[in-house]
Amino acid sequence: KALLDRMIVLRDSGVIDFSPCETSYNTVINAYAKAAFRGEEGSAESALAILMELLDSSQPPEGDADETGAPNPNDVIPKTDAVGLVQPNTITFNAVLGALANGASEESAMAAEELLETLLSTYRSACLHNGRTAARRVQPLTISFNTVINAWARSSSPHAVDRSEGILNLMKELRADGTLPHLKPDVVTLASTLNVISRSREIGAVSHAKALYDDLIETHNIRPNVLAMNTLIKVCANCAKSDVTERQLGFSIAKEVYEHILQSATLKQDSFTYACFIKACNLVSPINQLEERRELVKGAFERCCEDGLLHRK
Image (cartoon, rainbow, N blue to C red; front, side, top):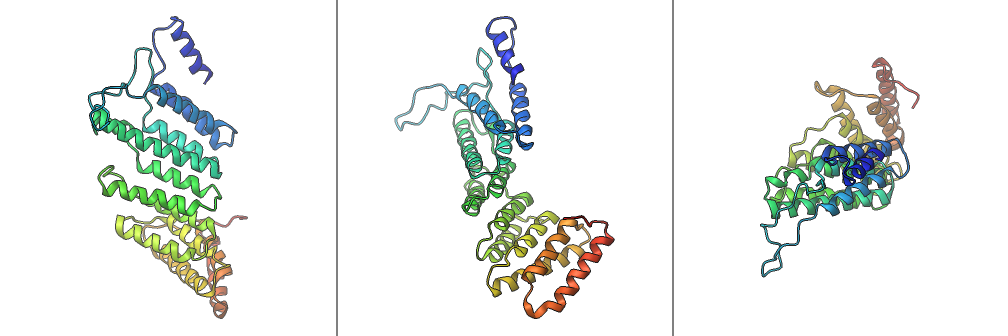
């Protein structure tokens, strides 16, 4: 950041005749994003501040509006002005979204969601002024939405499930209405949304998670990976305080998914698979299936050891 500021000072004083470019700003923002990942306080806010400065400096000119009040489409958003102001792109936004997601708080998750809304409005404005092709440089991507869902998963907010599913529904709406026809929930969307549910410990979480899992797979032709399946097992393992019917459903789903992973020719179980399944057996298996539980736990533990995946956790 100090080098970036120094470059601007030298440019403004006439010592150099070039300006910081898109890469310059993205590099600084990425540095703050990595610092946020390491837990350095204030890094995400610093990245956001730089992005907002860029946004303020790259607003479209105030041209003539038509009789409806809409901006004149002939007013083109400048990419760089005479003194070198740079317009942020999707990479810039995604880096800041990632930094905010690492904040692991309701405030940072809300800031990430608001920034996603800013990215979407910036894209819509760019489409209006420059056309959809030129607007691709600020086009929201699936990873943009996934990052915000992950921010809510890390937030420990009581509103996390509702907020993350709101983001998921927004993805579906933007694809359906043609605003972002390329936008499609993927396996990361699936795993991240399930992770939000698993951390919520909400009543009916198992039924909720299984319905979402089935819907995304069928509607968007998602092929679930081990992470998504592990997370579904984790939802089941976390329903110990639910009623008997929900716990029985959780045990049944956890067992079914676990066995599917083991029997698959394309999926490879990991330590998280065994840990989640053993926890599911211990916490949610029905009282009249204790012998089956013992055998399942014993089998999972022995197989985990054979696979060389046993660790202290």
